[in-house]
Length: 150
Length: 150
Image 1 (tube, rainbow over the protein chains, first blue to last red):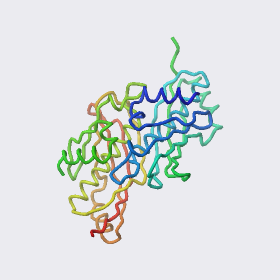
Image 2: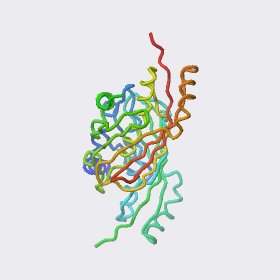
Image 3: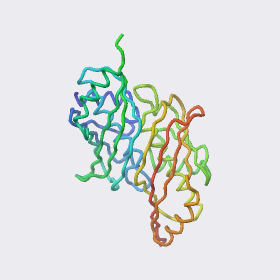
Image 4: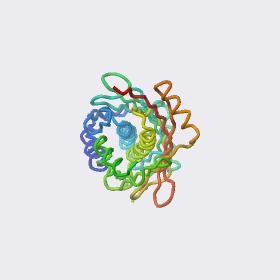
């Protein structure tokens, strides 16, 4: 998927992504990379607000599954069920969220389940990076629902 | 703490709280209640974006500890270390985040540790509510660092 198409989709459909000035740096099947600057995401300690860090990590994770499902030509709704988030180091500037599948071997099982049962679960990891260091990590659990074509 | 004072503090110090149109409904020692409308927090499915739900829940949890620490007259920095978040039901309108201490008995231990060691951990729960139902739940782990007065 084209990174500009994904960025436009996020900004139009999820206005908070625009408020956070999220940029799509890469939208591949292997990983999605989002970036966000400090200013709109700052907190009282002049570092990135944990809620922004989480939200950008969730967006990256969601975007990876969205990119993969579009690539498969499958029309589905994608919903987050739960996540864990670790805030490892303070973030003092533009940061990145890089999402990927921890277990790529799970993908065929996921697609098979989605097609057969109309519903399947998938886990996605997003790592937050700032100045080349890992500063946060999200593990998100998503459910995809197959949308029947009219 | 006065709810207007907290709201102004959040809006000034954490601009994303303003972008999400977060309102402080209550700021007590027992609970902090924040509210946020759908429009600035909407997603592609016309429900609340998971990143917004998480961010408002984190803000409510943070605000409870901030309110309590100010009440104690202690000057400290408060940082989130980790959280888990469950998204239980879709949210189709203005929602609330209500934060509280699961274990109020932990508070004296926390204060004692903060004063003696200059650093202490605390767990806070935030429940998301929409139309009277529990629609999400966050468990956040925070660390407070004592700030030495000059």
